[in-house]
Image 1 (cartoon, rainbow, N blue to C red):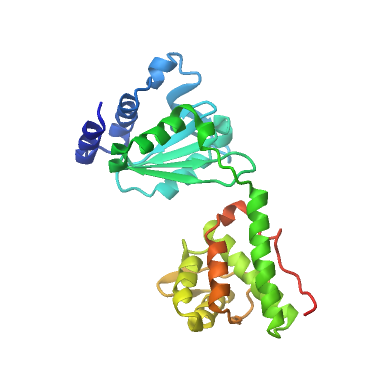
Image 2: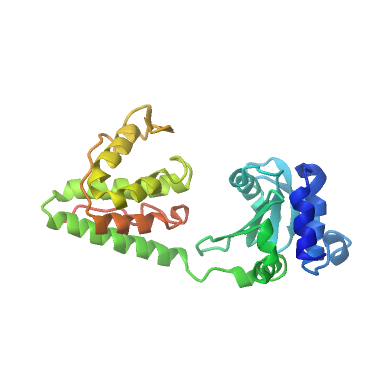
Length: 292
């Protein structure tokens, strides 16, 4: 099967997940000149469709396609929520021998998520027309045959150190401006928690990062934006724009107070927010008051 034949077929397809998933995967094998699961493993012991597994909460389920020490693959119908598909297949990883790659697809987009222990997870997205590109086909072929080629080089420890260094510098700058060390520590801890919260789903997706992006162009509005968010998090119910914000109990968000940041500081926080904070424990880099 040529790339254009594959693209034309699946661009026109209106098949639902159940009726199209296996044929889509088999066509990918033909496109990449790979054996199908039945050809490579007739017994279905290490490579098969609908591999049974138990969720991490004990319920039975299955992966749409599974290859031991390689990947677990979850299919959805066109235009489905691939983030939910990823959450679904993640629940089965212990019962699937913890494959290094989790792959989700709606038959138009393929997302490859790396899951090696003690490395930062990376996501590779391949859209339907990307398959015209030899590099995209090669990356997908690595995912299906040589997953080690996609192993990230950066560790969680390195990312945590990078984030800690950024916030130590901002805290020092704020204390140098005459802000009370206790107030600075609480403010920095709020920033750190917001980054963690949006990446693990406690805040609406990319809400804090989007706020920082707007503030880069207008640093004078940072305090207004941050105070609105902190205030919503401090109340038992609140909104920021059209997004509903949960109440965050525990004392960190007990008011809407925010310190001002200049353009360089906002850009540093924005760069830190682009890290994957689901890979970082905010406790590790929690800011403590220091003498000014």
